[in-house]
Image (tube, rainbow, N blue to C red; front, side, top):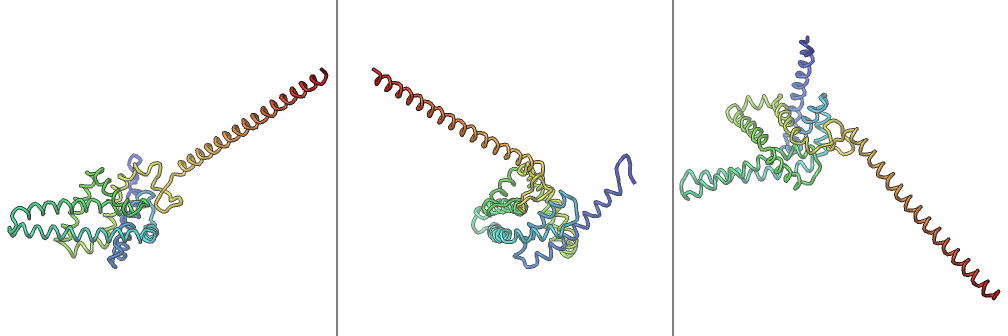
Length: 283
């Protein structure tokens, strides 16, 4: 059924496919998170698969997920362990200073330190929102990944606030309806959240991927290159090589011409000397 070129059947099929992909992605994500220390690799694979699926719109979510999980396991695990330690320390700081503030035993210091700890925890959460999607899309050291995550969270601050708000709603839902949320998110919720977050991350990453696109892998696992751009780049490199070859050829010709000119001058000078000696003998 269609109205003025709008195909409702096509839209419905795409929607159902997306829901099915979200369910598969959620189940795989939950299973791969069970060892706890693999949560980092699972988050990276979740974001990679979501961004990849949103770009090419196919159903190979399991293939994309396990490919990313394997390729990014080591570095994603390191990033996750760092995040876990930082969150634990900052969370404990908030709890400790808030308790001191409520007890009123140290004056205004408890209130000030509670505010400072909350700000630091918020900044850390902002960075953690971006670091795993960045890990899914770019190859860098752990230090660079965290730095870029911080810079992107500031540059796209409205998007950061929106994702923080969504995350807060999810935490609130788990707090009040834990059992229901566990079932819902295990079935399709994590995949749905991955698609939502992945959509916004694609918008944030797009300026930094030009002329790259989110369609085909070329060579490296994380970098995606447009075929036309690759052709243009190869043509430009070929032109540069031809220009360099032509310059070298011109330099070689100039060197040969100069050598021939020098030899000609030497020959002329030799003839003049011979002529001069002949004239001397005749005299």
